[in-house]
Image (cartoon, rainbow, N blue to C red; front, top):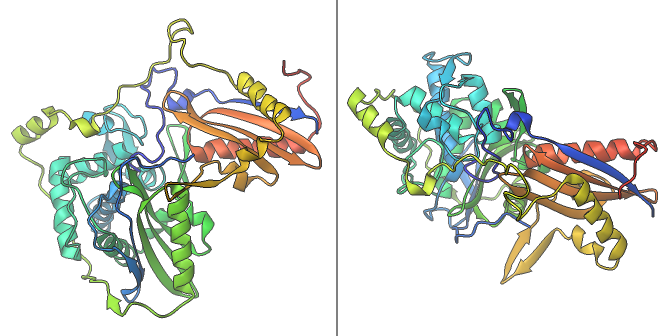
Length: 449
């Protein structure tokens, strides 16, 4: 997605590049918030029967808002149509231009000249929501991202998306880009209807590129029985968005949630909406305005002079790529904030030991402030039986960190994972580590100080 879960951008020579991120883990035997949009996004939703187009429920569905990485659904619509017409193959190679490689997180941290296959690019967009991959596809199909955006808008009009304008291929903030929940439902239904042979990509939950495995963040796939795809999205101005489809007893529904306060609350709303929809056959009596299958028209590449001029233009300030983060050469050079996994383990143990009366706060998963309910992102609490707290953390330079503790049969373990490549992989490492720890009584023979 555009920025829902950022990771460190590092060049190939960076000691903190994804391929060589240090994963520091410690497992210790002891005796016995949320990422929230700071803008005020528009909250809207719609649920439709994907086969008939009947609107089953809606709220504020025509309110104009920002698509964020839901934009990539239209990018994939263009790509799937080009594949279907045989003008490109899944095995074809896409080269990252300097413009594509400069796209801000989330991304694959590529350099100009790097390559990716069409099929891997699809997976990178669905799973990683890679902005650099989306831009590279736009340039591959349209010649320039500017020309590709024109093609996206032509298709949007043809599909019946009357309140949508696309300005780029990836959904990063840019003036003039907007949509509605209703229009995203039209696009979601069109993807399922027009490209059944490619729809399965929307259920992919991990992929590997340049030796790095990436996990996804579409957790509706795990939280609702029958859910089989589509896409999440986030920028500050949009809040947390998701388009999800699910099938039960041969009936397919598609839902859109825009402007969620957090990934947790967005997913919770989607699950509730799908649950209610499958439990009832009564709709609103209105239909989604579904136009038929659209054959996209390839957009000629811009003239060479225009393409050069466009490439020379700096990115808008709102989406200018951040400079790669270089770790400090020494503590003296940047004394403000450094630590180690071992020290975080010492702190975690101390919190449990010294404040048993307050430790329960680390298991809290939601709270309310000024009438807004916020959900957490410590999903180890849900993924490991016996986990009862501590804390997650993330900045670009650190990667995804977590300190977790769990109790089984009166034995408490505490683990630390630093530098995870994504929340999914960080949590997966922690669960595996705790599982292995509880399954064995043999340690390293060393003690925490």
